[in-house]
Amino acid sequence: MTGTKTGLVGHPVSHSKSPLIHGYWIRKYGLNGSYSLLDLSCEGLQSGIEKIKAEGFRGFNITVPHKVALLDLCDEVNALARAVGAVNTVTIENGRMSGTNTDVFGFIENIKSKSPTFDFKAGPAVVLGAGGAARAVVQGLLMEGVPEILLSNRTESKADTLIETASEPNKIKRLGWNSGEAGEAVSTANLLVNTTSLGMTGKPKLEIDLSSLNPRALVHDIVYAPLMTELLLRAQERGNPIVTGIGMLLHQARPAFSLWHGVMPDVTDELEAMVTQ
Image (cartoon, rainbow, N blue to C red; front, side):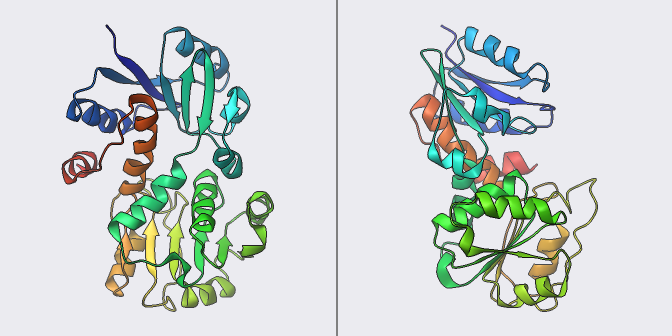
C-alpha cells in the first residue's frame, strides 16, 4: 500500500520547505502518505499534471509560476480561488481536479495566531505589491472587514488590475510607489503588509519611509528568508508590533493537508523551529 500521494508543482521547487511541513504532519498523525517535489516547466505543465493524475495522486500544491494557469486546468475552481485569481491547492477525486486557494487562510491565521488582539476593522491597511500574494492578502483583508485598503505597487497598471478584479474594489485605493501619499497613508495605517520580494535574501532592499508610521500599526512582512527582514527590524525598533512571514507558509499548508488526509493539523513550536532553521 503506497498511501496518500501528494506533492508540490512548480518551477523551480527544490528550495521549497513544503515537504518538511507535510512530512512532519504525516509522521505526527501516524498517516500513510508521501509529499513529493514535482518540477514542471510551463511547457510541460499540462502533460505533467496528466501524469500526476495517472500515478494516483490525491492532490498537490502549486507554486510559481503556475498558480494562474491552474484556473483553466482544473475541472472545478471554488469562488475564493476565482476571487484571488489563483489556485494553490488541488484535490483529485475520480480523475477530476478541484482547485482552491489557501493563501488567504494562511495570511489571516498567521496574524490571528501571532497577534490575537489585533482588530482588522480598526483602520486602513497599507499593502505593498500587487502580485499573486497581494491578491490573496487583499482578499483576506476584505473578508475580515478592513474598512479601506491602500495599495502601492511599482507598476501602477498591475495595481489597477488587482483593484478592478477584487471582490470589493470600492474599498481599495491606489497609492503612488514611494510617494508622499504613501508616507501619509502609513501615518493612519492600522496594518502595513509587504507582499513584494523586496528585502528577501538576494533581492534589492525595500525602500520605505517609516518615520510617520502609526506607532500602533501592526507590521507584517510575508518574506521569510530572512525571517527578520529589514522592514520588521526597523518597525520593531520603533516599538511597533510585528509578524514574520513564516507563519503564512505554515498555516496555508493546513487546509490542503486537511483536504487530502482528513486531519486539520496544528502549527507547533517544534515545526516552526524546524522550518526556520
